[in-house]
Image 1 (cartoon, rainbow, N blue to C red):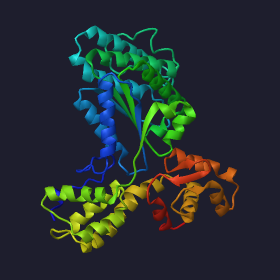
Image 2 (image 1 turned 45 degrees about the horizontal axis):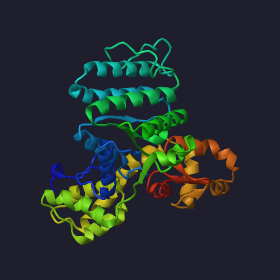
Image 3 (image 1 turned 120 degrees about the vertical axis):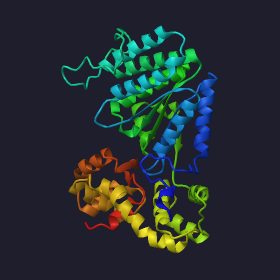
Image 4 (image 1 turned 30 degrees about the horizontal axis):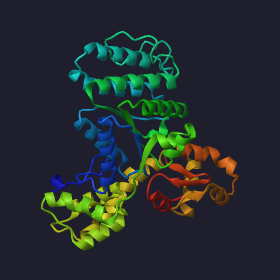
Length: 393
């Protein structure tokens, strides 16, 4: 069939043509937006899940929903090797730029931009001689506000001031943070403290984060009250009905159908994971001769889809690991696909658990495994164990 008309989109963070199975999360965020708009107290929101379940897609959809309500929005992607000070400054700058044309008091906008500039200039990680750095803001930096150098104090003051600007317009500001588990430990504490202050003052600024399954534990370890500070939404694989809808709806728009046997085969292959659904659907479409797409089409196309996943989805991550880290991952995979005990991995490798800590910690930092709970570890990527068992040790 015509590959140009292929509707499926297996890309990183790329929205599929049919966002199936996420109605509950969309409704939850709609409630958050509505409550904030009405001045009701509301918690910030955190989405968690494995790689490939659509966290970034959902985060981007939330951002679009906020923009449709004329909110100010900004988005960052956290990295373990940098502070969030500059990225947050840039994101809030973008949010205020979205709001400023509608504000009737330009001096209020300039006043906030002065605070924002002062906040950005206090980045301790900036190279020597670059302390004058600013995010392209043509106003003098304010003094005595969000410029103490203590991120917890500065971020709280910045959020409060940003929320005040949004209040003037009767709207809100939403800061979206992808890969939130990679926010540095001290920055997580500052972020939680700033959100805590907003929750008490009722300021219309929310933080919406997305991260791996252990993110709630990261937040809780930073501030004990974080369990009550955020609304948590765990997303997982799609059920059968949603997975079928993700395939059927886009195809119907192009006048193409699937046989029931083809849908059965595709669900078995993709196991309900949204990224895999798109990957197998795309190749099945490209290799099918005509509509309807059949189980034989899926059988012929599955090896090509698996090869593409092996290179782009699994292989790219595997290549980032050192030999010692690969040995550790192979040991996990040989035990099974469920979370495994670190002591069991050490026993299999004939090593003391303490001697394997560097490899385990490095894999966690690289986002390849996560600590499901104390003493247990698991892969962040679905079917990664199956992939490793097919690789030579």
